[in-house]
Image (cartoon, rainbow, N blue to C red):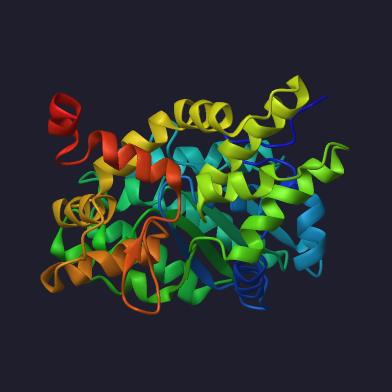
Length: 341
């Protein structure tokens, strides 16, 4: 039986994409407007940004949010693969995407891209460009201020919209202050991918297994405890639990150990991306200590990321036991604990 949970690569098929309904509605209403608007999708690693773009790029989905898909040219640039280092390299990527759609190619220049836009407008067509990991461009010193001014001018003057993804707000990911203060960023509406709500997390866990003919029982609560509200960790735990149930070995300890092993790389990256104050807060929570008021700002940022939860009395906990286990083993004090028990 095929495992319906995918965690080692972004979701490709619309039918396998769960939740994010409100986010997709906001995005679609902007890029599908009579005059396309630009959207910046922001979320931490493995929060589903690329999967969301996959959904928007799928012809089945486009029929749902575009009145007439034939009147739009949707170009997708996966910038994390061989990131362009200069505007010319960027426009070369645009040209390859244009050719892939069977359109007439363009010169890899500002004028070439401008000519594409004007050609489409002459045919009463719109251009929407999906730019996955656009922070790799804004942080790259090979892209001068003129590039961003040009891109803004096109979007303001023509039927052009951009949809970007990044792990942080684009204005905080610039290689110079001039670019950070550029009006380019004013054209974007920001859509933040927050941790799943409790009902969304349960839906992601329950529905794929049920659709595959092998519904979970008590494993649902185990998985929710392991993954908390993290889309990625829930997929990992669900994948492992589904395989274990198929093998007839659905024991909580076994599922937890396998899920922890499968999520190790992600947990490493998650920990490395945290600031020192955030790490200190995570360690304090793991040790059962109250968060110092001087670190409240770090605790609040962790709560927004779904890595911490605050109850009505102001006490914090870690909702994903996979994260709590990692912090206990790798956080401050973890080494001494291993030495002295």
